[in-house]
Amino acid sequence: MKKAFLIFGLFFSLFAFSAGNTFGQQTPEIERDPIMEADANHNLEVANNYYRTKKAYKAVLLRFEETFAAYPDYSKMDEFLYIAGMSSFYLSNNKGKQKIDVGLTEDEKKKYAPEKLREEATMYLTMLVEKYPNSKFKNDAAKTLKELKK
Image (cartoon, rainbow, N blue to C red):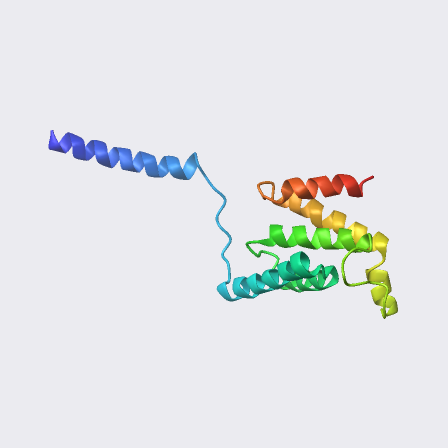
C-alpha cells in the first residue's frame, strides 16, 4: 500500500511538472539589471514629480528620452510611456508651466513644434496600448488617442 502511494505521488509530481511546462507555458521574465532599474526608477520618480506637481512637461520628456534610450526594458515603461505621451499632448496644446516657444534653438523649435509633439504623443500612447495591454494606464491612453485622431 505504501508502495502504491509512493508510486502514485511520484507519477503525480512528474505529471504536474510536465503539465506545467507544456500546458501553462509562460513567457520568461525579462532579466532586469538592478542598477539600471534603480536609475530608471529614479528618473520615473523625478519625471512624475515634474508631471504631477510642477506641470513641467518638457522636463518629463527629457527624462523619458534618457531612460528609454538607455533602458527600454524598464519594468515600469508603461507608466513612463503614459506620462511622456500625455506630456507631449499637453505641450502640443501649449499647456504647462514650461513654455516651449521661449529661447529655443532652431532644432528645438522643430522638436517642440505642436505637430511633432502630437505625433510623439500618438506614438508613445499607441506603444503603451499595444505593448502593455494589461497596463492600468491603457484606458486613459486610449481615450487620449481618440482625441488625438480627431
